[in-house]
Structure formats: C-alpha cells, structure tokens
Length: 67
Ligand code: HEM
Image (cartoon, rainbow, N blue to C red; front, side):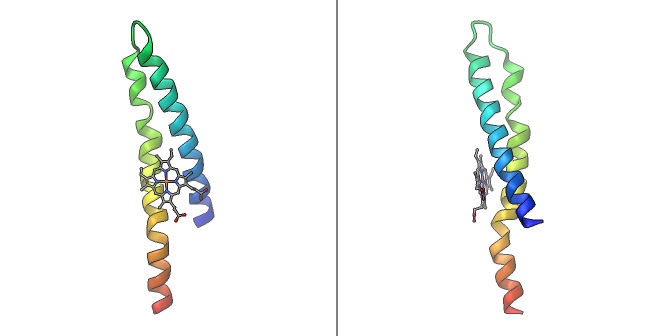
C-alpha cells in the first residue's frame, strides 16, 4: 500500500508537470485558451492527498513502534 501510494505520487508529479507545460503553451497563444489552465488542479489535488499520506507515514510508524 505505501509503495503503491509513493509510486502514484511520483506519476501524479509527472502528470502535474505535463499539465503545467501545456498550460504555459496554451496561455502563450495570441488567443489564450484559459480553461486549460485549470487542468493542473486535478493532479495537484492528487499530489496533495498522496503527499499528506507520505508525510504522515514516518510519524505513524514511530507511534506504532512506541506501543
Ligand atoms: C501538493 C502538496 C505535496 C505534498 C504534501 C507532498 C509531499 C511529499 C512527501 C511527504 C514525500 C515523501 C518524502 C519522503 O521520502 O519522505 C514526497 C515525495 C515526492 N514528491 Fe511530493 N508533495 C507534494 C507535491 C509535489 C509536487 C507538486 C511534486 C512535483 C511536481 C512532487 C514530487 C514528488 C516526488 C518526485 C517525490 C519522490 C517520490 C519517490 O520517488 O519516492 N510532490 N512528496
């Protein structure tokens, strides 16, 4: 489960980076396609929640070891 979340976080990071690059290109057009700039929000939200999980892991492991 932990390895799966870590691998997902890594791939969400790739997706996020790609959508940011697409957004930069879309907004640089003479007639900018503004809705595309909302695309990075989805992978960013996934990064946020999987990142919070990864962040909590060492603290959870420490509490379990103490018990
Ligand atoms: C949005 C909020 C985010 C949070 C809360 C977060 C949190 C974390 C945490 C806690 C880790 C594990 C660090 C460790 O090994 O102890 C991690 C790893 C990582 N994060 Fe994030 N992160 C976020 C966003 C991002 C973004 C925007 C990117 C890049 C576009 C990114 C890329 C990565 C990568 C590549 C790793 C290493 C994964 C691996 O191969 O193990 N993260 N992140």
